[in-house]
Image (cartoon, rainbow, N blue to C red; front, side, top):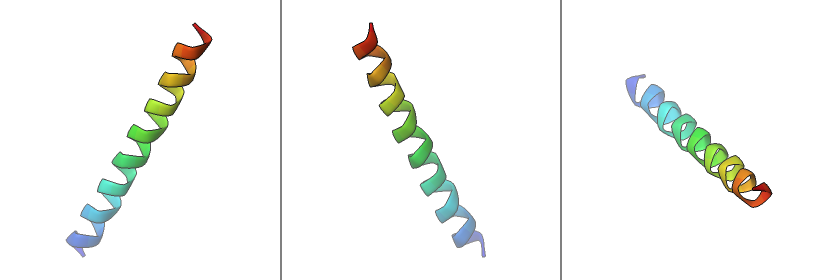
Length: 31
């Protein structure tokens, strides 16, 4: 069970990082 929680946490963190980078690059392009 802890393995599933760790897997979901890693995927969630990776998704948040990817979305953050995506909007970060969009903001830089707008500037």
